[in-house]
Length: 293
Image 1 (cartoon, rainbow, N blue to C red):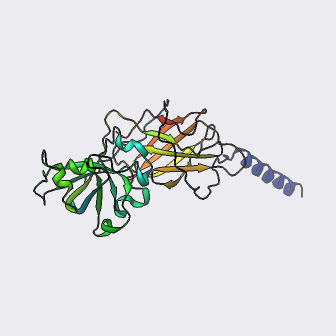
Image 2: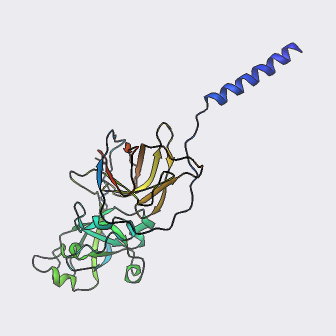
Image 3: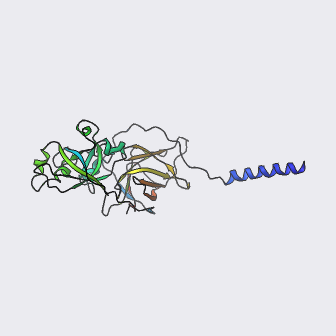
């Protein structure tokens, strides 16, 4: 009897110790996406510190394929202010510099294609130079002519004109629907690191961020967030376009600074430690010190 009691006490002790040493997860309950309100266009920028790159990017160059191409917006413009990816007026500024396109669903990929880079060239019109122009997917072309083929680029007037022979940009833009060739290429934002723009709707219990200027793949397959003092990565949810969200329904505020772990389309991982400071504010862009190399 004494031996049985001793065994019972030993088991109770072991169970208690296992509970004490088990890690406490910091993950938060995820809610459905919130309705979006149009954010302000002008954002302050803050530099972040203590960042670290996990693994290098991969070369994503592929063979040429056929697609259709049109242009939208003003002849020498940037298409629209960011469109379905959420980049807003950044599309007309460096490093995008208006060299953008709205992609058909096969290119936009429900927003997961935002930020991907492609070379596009044409040879079927007398105004075509045959030289490729590099564009970034910053918007979606969801219907109409954009569904006529396997892929379609509704380009900005600027990027459409970049495929033309010198002095023939207007003639090329007037050609209507062009048959082009395209291929996926690595994004290269020389001298620019990844930026994290906190959404205007973010608050102590709900965090949403736009991620832009990723070298290499350019687009992201997954984003994870680690709260201060946590030690555990929790998946964020793609809200729409290039915006990712993370929230708490526990009644407790999220604990900043936040570290963000990015996984690119090809599976390459990069970590920006404490990139969102404890004093973060909605509407502010925080510049990291890292990019895919």
